[in-house]
Image 1 (cartoon, rainbow, N blue to C red):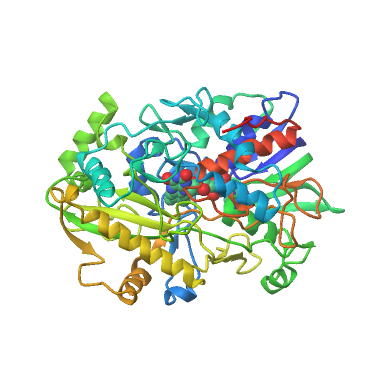
Image 2 (image 1 turned 90 degrees about the vertical axis):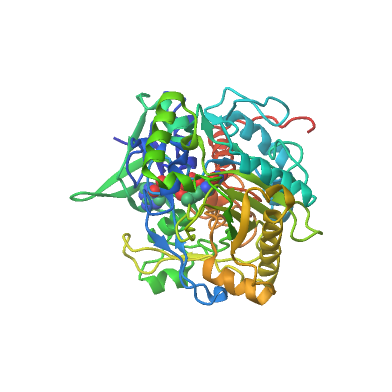
Length: 535
Ligand SMILES: Cc1cc2nc3c(=O)[nH]c(=O)nc-3n(C[C@H](O)[C@H](O)[C@H](O)COP(=O)(O)OP(=O)(O)OC[C@H]3O[C@@H](n4cnc5c(N)ncnc54)[C@H](O)[C@@H]3O)c2cc1C
């Protein structure tokens, strides 16, 4: 049966598109996801995040050795499950800075994507538990709420940051991004609000929407310069599926350039050296990769102030019961629910450092677990100048791609990241945290110079999981898609996901991706939400 639209990739972007496009019963939509279902309750529990960077529902990829990090290979979690990253992420709901989107217009030529023009799409998707004003709304599919019961150490952290001169901010997604506070979370009633549970589940019984799981797309089929369908892997061989109107690729910032290259769309030289026949030479595919790199300080606590205490079995059982019976307690925590935005470069146009307070140690893959209870403070530099690539290792669709974020290729990124790490250490040393924090364990008091801290970073840094920009929209020769997300040079093919962002926003990237897909669905359907007269 031919479909009107085939959406490849059931992550945040794919789920939003499936919902919005199939709202018209005359449009037949197929959503294809390589991963499986999210039925397991672990996906719904906010604290399930503690398992999510350690291989659950992920493709199992790593970066190539990082040239500017002394050859370090970094574990690179990318979701493989319906809902994509929104089913395994830390559920922080952040939109970034208004100037991020304004720069999409002024610096990348993406007409129509200014903050004023995208704000209505953030609001349309939102079901905010608390806030209704010029920046927020309720009644949309995506649950947004504040942490249920943050522990005392997180409030001490807020006071400590203020002692250092960083102001309190009750809403990073409002008029001002700067400051420290509790994050809004993509949760509703103490459960994860993933794109799957928010956008897909409520419309699964639409007769014009088909969702196929465990269906990895092997290539987009191009005939006479037009995308006409896809070929997917099946237990016994392959299957071809036709799209009458469009194929929409929403496989994420790694998956989308990977699928395009497997389909023969990308830089001709790179395709040839991977053994793929060139269908359409498009140099920007897989270029312009941006990501946020996390450095962190870990301190030992004076007592059981964080969820490291849950390591003891009787406490885990009690926390489970508390959650099941009352929807309160540690399981309601995403473990990273406090933090904020501040400056490494005082001349920066808007905050360029983001903090995430980790309520424990060893929460994420590769991060040290302390013997005694600990607290972690991540700091990520938000506007990297380094640019990386996503390439194929070979023509085999099962092979892992070559992911090269090229972290710290630009010395400015290293300089700002180290300033961010110093700020994180300073916050943890402020008087307000003294009753909670015994001593810094990582990097450790003895490491002071930039060189020593850089050596520590080479050993310990990790991705903040925000790849973007690898099929960037724009108007220049490197642009992969036009500002209406059409692939340049092929008819009937759009790219809609984090890969289409020309610059990674200064925040976590789930809400911005959902916004991109919300706006894309209107572009596809020929509709438009009007921007507010003023904000
Ligand atoms: C561990 C982790 C923690 C994060 N924490 C946060 C956070 O707290 N807050 C936040 O805002 N952001 C966070 N992010 C980032 C956020 O989740 C991503 O920006 C967002 O998921 C990107 O959405 P996407 O639709 O572009 O791609 P993805 O989420 O990557 O979804 C793409 C989907 O396409 C599927 N796919 C790929 N290739 C194929 C193929 N060939 N055929 C079929 N299907 C395919 C994948 O399996 C996947 O399900 C986190 C991400 C990770 C991984």
